[in-house]
Image (cartoon, rainbow, N blue to C red; front, side):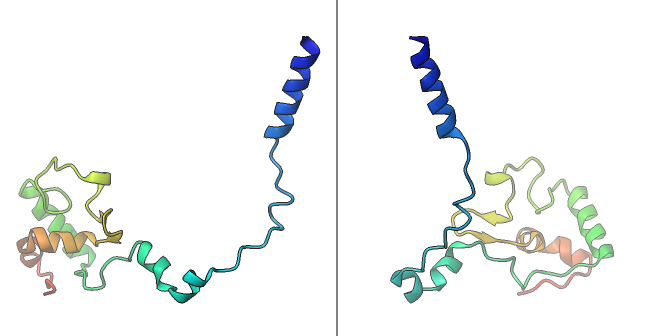
Length: 123
């Protein structure tokens, strides 16, 4: 019985051994007709970069807005302290796959915070 266990163990070990030499030489599969006909499909699934209409703050304005938010009992996004976010942050919408700039959220939630620190709020 022991020789059978040894043989089985040796086979299991050999089967689990990584082999990478032949994997690197495998060429990538050619794009299918559906992919070639609709190249933007991959771009639609990829997360979009932060909005280009996000407010731009310099170091002084950033410090001013952060102080304003903290003084009003708000978190970094203009919501009440202790607000819980799915995924840990409100800057990524898992449903759409789009990222949102932090300052865009502040502008949406508390435009008065930006205005009090002389930050132009985009329309």
